[in-house]
Image 1 (tube, rainbow, N blue to C red):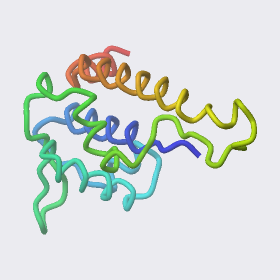
Image 2: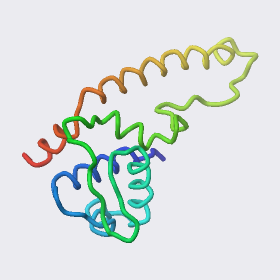
Image 3: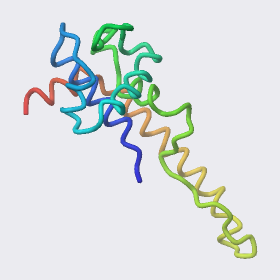
Image 4: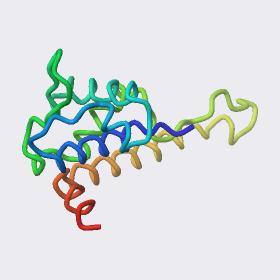
Amino acid sequence: MTNNRFAVAVHIMTLLESDKGTRITSDYIAGSVNTNPVVIRRIMGLLNKAGLVATSAGIAGAVITRPVNEITLYDIYMAVHNNGQDELFAIHEKPNPDCPVGRNIQSSLETAFTEAQRAMEEKLAGITLEQITADVMSR
């Protein structure tokens, strides 16, 4: 199953920006995302740790800590990317070393997949939360 943490994190950030000035609860966000509030709290914790949102113990909700034109999708991606443990593309393990393709496929794929990952990250770095929020609100 594909990890949707990044998409949910962007949803959370966009929702926080669209309701600017109010502290939105994880229950409210969970209703918008259509998931469990625990999932939202976990992702909010990652966003908080990355300095993208501020939460306060005993006070419901969160607020964005920086102007949205300074927050890129790459910033959000890195906040929830699990310290590089989540791979964009996974390579199958233990191909047959007696097969000429099996023996060499991993190194060839690693190179291609690393280049694709880098290109995706560069693209995300060029898109701001402000752009996403404006697009969502215009629809």
